[in-house]
Length: 73
Image (cartoon, rainbow, N blue to C red; front, top):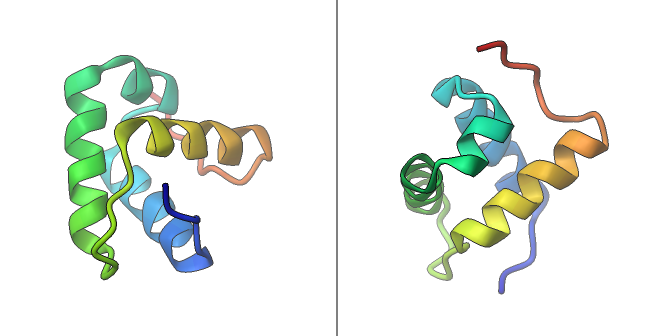
């Protein structure tokens, strides 16, 4: 398990906006979440990768804190 650095969180938010899929739909779709996680991990320089579960959890945490950009489906 990796720690979420501020750079990793910013990259997650950036990719989330680019993906243009609301967080609930993204988390519910195993394929979409897997692809999102893979893309995020490829953008981060660290060799340790986040799991899909870690990414889903962080998306929910950021959303609940009110810091996740709003995407309308």
